[in-house]
Amino acid sequence: MGQKVRIQGETLWVWWLAALAVACCLVTTIVFAPGYMSPDSIDQLRQAMGRTPLTDWHPPVLSLVWRALIAVTGTPSSMAVLQSVIFWGALWVVAWCVWELTASRAGSLAVLCLGLTPPVLTFVGVVWKDVHVAGALLAACAVALVGLRLRDSRLPPAMRWGLLWLGVLFLAYAMLVRKNAFLAAIPMFVLLVLALWRSPGRRTWAKCAAALVAGIVLPAAAISWFVRPVQTDQGAQIMLDDLIHVLTVEELRSANVPPELRDRLVAAAEECDRIGALSDAYWACYERPADGLTGDSDHMTSLWLREMRGHVSGYLQYRLRLFAALLFETGYPYQPGVFGNDLGIEVARPRLEDTLDSYINGTATDLRPLFRGWFWLAVALVLVVRPGRGTFSLPIRALGISSMTYVLGYLPIMPATNYRYIYWSALACTLGLLLLWLDRGTTDPTDPTTSGSDVTRTGSAVTLHPAVTARQPTDPENQSATQ
Image 1 (cartoon, rainbow, N blue to C red):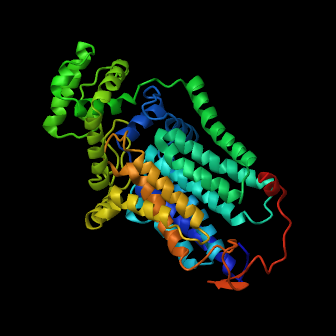
Image 2 (cartoon, rainbow, N blue to C red):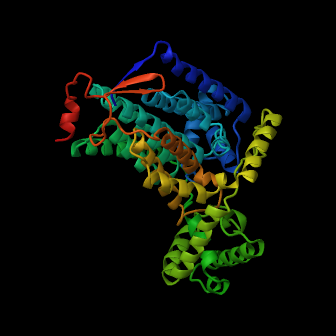
Image 3 (cartoon, rainbow, N blue to C red):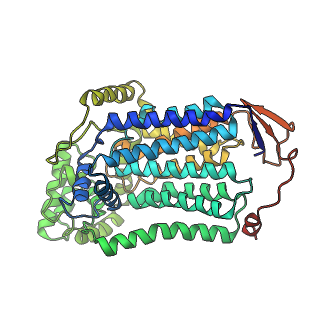
């Protein structure tokens, strides 16, 4: 990357960025206190507080983390505080790296301002697994940018592997807290490895992959063995949607399933048709028995496997229709405060909640594309196809691929058309666009195909290209990694 020589006093800028990030974190915590919560959030809070048994309807890791925070702090609001700290801390690290690599005050400041844009700010303080996924992936991206900044220095192997494990920790948590997050996490994992090793060899890839697998499997096994969450067969919820929207009522009436289940399927299909419910039938149309989907899941799975093979066209049409609704009719851009509950949890500052409501919903009305799935999918495609050739081309493309695969991955499993399902894509694409803007007219100084003067001045920093600086010994780990 070359060596940057700072003008005296400019190194204080990173601390001004830190102070601004802390201020934004405090404001976010105050506005969202004690954390905005939907029915899903309240359900997980009940589990965290021990009011109801821990289940696997939502991956239990979030409830377990929340339980630990409540045990330490004594208040459920600690989860929203943790979310804000991780979010703004990650943005500060990204801003710091942008400053170090570009010496652009405007660029580094814009990174923090990204967190105040309506499509991003809307869910920062909402206790949802979707928000945890986005925060963890953003933190992993921040670690990767630190690695990218330090990659060509004489980085000690212990620090290099320490950064790898830190990034893996965030990526593993993202996949543990939401099952389909692996589609977004794998591109970020590749970014992490390539940011830490310029040309990783097969051994390095194998070790890094083993670290990621261990980071997922070991906690998952520990939760399964020691916590033993109640099995709910939540995956049958998707099959339920397919069955009652793909099969006709007459076909459901003749389905080879127990009479009780057959009656519930027929009634659900008729009710969904009456109210116009395109998805989420389990909550909108289905007469739920006491055990939820547990007793019906095996029969429902068998019926789904038999029927979908003979209704391929209908299945594809339904799933494409639902996916089109996610892209072009994206709803639920804002979670209004705290859902009514008997836990004594309510919005701490209603007037600030009203202000945030006006800010988010007003923007969603006036600038509707910012809250539509098609817009962020299009941006992701641009980032993948045209990431530039500058310093940030690698993270730009990784963010684009992560965003695109995450959205497309909802095609067969999407339960509803909510904005929360594309929240990570909106955050990643916003950051990718900003990095692309910062890369305008620049080239990667380590790219041997680029040429230029030996000294470049960017903002307040003077960059000496590697050809001018004294040659540094090759990192022994980099040598072994390419073998």
